[in-house]
Length: 128
Image (cartoon, rainbow, N blue to C red; front, side, top):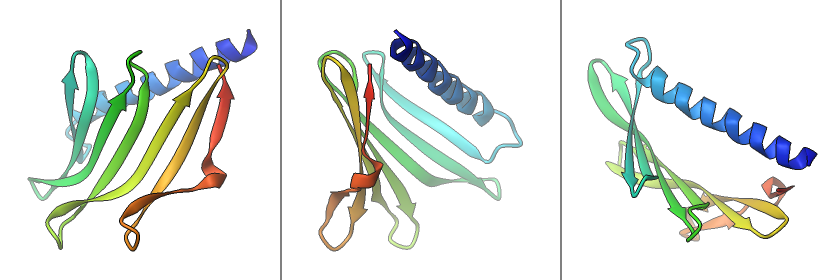
């Protein structure tokens, strides 16, 4: 029961954090602008722009995948490379769910292998 309450509290904190980011994006003092894309009520992508001298420039891009239960299963982040004028992979977070727990695995992009490589020390399993 304590774990369930912890998960609920954690999700509320995460949602409040993202709501705060969205609200903060519209204030003129903040130099980051967020543009979310939704499909069927689920956020599938978000592009973050940086205000640079009155001009918006690409900064970060996030892509999200969900399972049939509408649970997030993958989150890929990309950084803007202005020298190459393209998005480059940075981090991939994959989530696995079973009846009792949620496992979160972090993968860092490896340019030599052209693939995401697991960072085992960052893998976390939490009870539901």
